[in-house]
Length: 285
Ligand code: SAM
Image 1: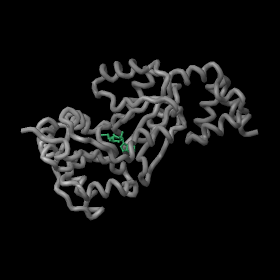
Image 2 (image 1 turned 30 degrees about the horizontal axis):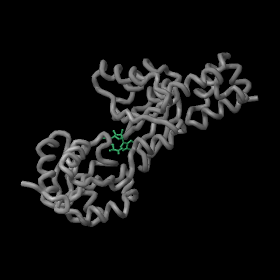
Image 3 (image 1 turned 90 degrees about the horizontal axis):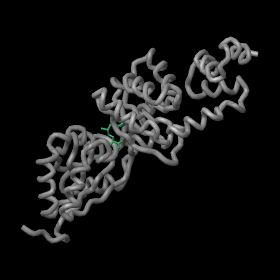
Image 4 (image 1 turned 45 degrees about the vertical axis):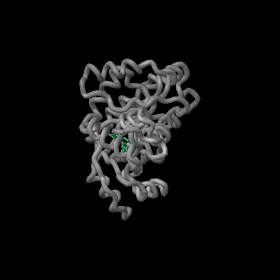
């Protein structure tokens, strides 16, 4: 059967909040209200979202494990003229979430795909990281397989742009250990946790600083790890950021980034290659 372009429906890739329901856009709500069907990564979660906004809409599941057969089904409906919204559990579809294959399928079949923009956790983390936003690369999740994880990290070790990773809390420590082994523990990172939620927290430190921080407390919630690029780290080696600072300013900078006074003194002493006591005395002068 041949379908005319004007008879076909449209696939709307709808970004939804990553934690704060207030971040849903008016256009997203409008599209969710107007489409014939919502294809959701997890229909239960999306039903909660729709209920919250008083939207009643047929749902179908579309996820990693049914994307082949469900993709064909969704395509058929689009070709028949149905308008469909695709949503993931949180954030933007097709970013470390299902969507990419459906988009390809639609393009191959001349079905219009459009997007309803909204949050992407990686971008929120990047802009809050304090690291360079001029050039960045989204690296997604690292593999659970150790060999693949190291291969991935080694392949970006010398990249000069800022790197963005997604990570689950129970794997955070082992990922930081792998990063320390490959990138070196002194590279600056920002750990963005529970973005847009009540307990949002950005920890700006070094890779080893983060390992130390999490040696005492279990990582909780959702994380994005933003890692400084290689060149920036090298530049700093030539002319350290603290070279024009007094010892007190140097220590205060680390404290303002979330370190305890004790750790900040230890780190400043290590940076300057002087005894801790010297920094301690100078700081308390
Ligand atoms: N499509 C989503 C997006 O646009 O960001 C990402 C989905 S991916 C399956 C889920 C991962 O995104 C989490 O493991 C975490 O790394 C990151 N993430 C999602 N929401 C987050 C939040 N509120 N705070 C920090 N990280 C978050």
